Each structure stands twice: as structure tokens, then as C-alpha cells.
Length: 82
Image (cartoon, rainbow, N blue to C red; front, side, top):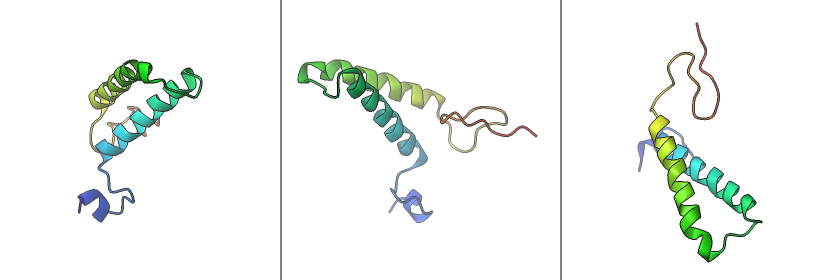
């Protein structure tokens, strides 16, 4: 059992995996919308590339724990400044 599940995260994913899941979902949603609600087999290499780029960006900006004061989190919410 993962620690995430023990502390009450209903999907049992770590914060990093939640961020990756959300990043992948956002990019797939964008790709499906861009391609007229359908991803053709021939488009999979480009879609995979775009998902990989977004995952790399998420990993580069992801840090565990709360963001430093005044710095925006990956969800766009800014941490309070005292």
C-alpha cells in the first residue's frame, strides 16, 4: 500500500504521479480537440511526442511540498506572501 493511499489520497497516487496524470490528460484532451475529436493511428507518433514534451516540462517544474512564497504552483495558484 502506498503512503499516498494511507494519508487519504483516494486514487492512491503520489503527488508527482497526480501531476503527471493531469499533465497527460490535459495534453491528450488538447490533441483530441485539435484533431476533430479523433486521433488517427498515423497521428500517434506526433501525439506521443507532444505528451512527452508536456511531461518533461511538468517534471522540470515539479517540486515536492508547497511552493516557495510568492511562486506559482503548477496549477497556477500563487503561494501567499507574508
